[in-house]
Image 1: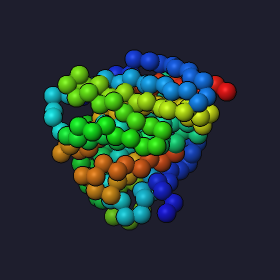
Image 2: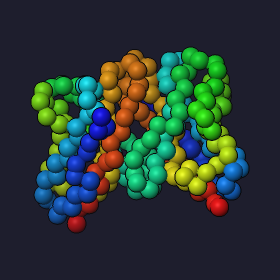
Image 3: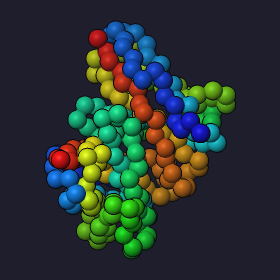
Image 4: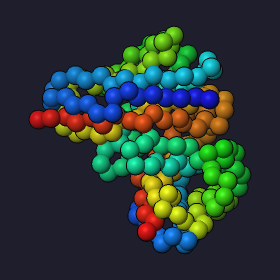
Length: 114
Length: 115
């Protein structure tokens, strides 16, 4: 069981480019959560997805950010036209269902916007 | 809205000694879960311990235990027999039961275990 896999581990983008962050949940897990960690801060919730559905996106910025979790393949967090303020570590967590609170986190993707 | 507060940005302890990390939270809900996560320099988020709010008994995992005071909305973590590998950021988090189960995190406490 490979755990939650996130790639890339590090991503550098120039201002205005697009960033695509990938998350493969643990085998059998159908619930995916994305969090953002700014320097010297705790993790902040962004979005909660189940297969093909966005359940809660209350933490997502209204513009430039989107997330999907297709029937096949990894969950994708997409940031369009990145700005320096988007520089952060982005974490994905998965769980088996919505009631056991058994989240497993990936190692995160550190995005640097130059 | 839920909030989690960790009032100690940094702490240090000598190897083999005991240290307690503080956490307070605020929620108007009665059913929730509380967590302590460890984040070493590798950046991996590792679950240390979990407490269901409806359980009065404090959770324990080997050298890690919590002091859960529901009325005071306090959830401190005690690490006994500290080891060098315990050096990390420690985050307290809360999740409401029955909602989207998202975690609300505190800002963290940086713990250094000295030899």
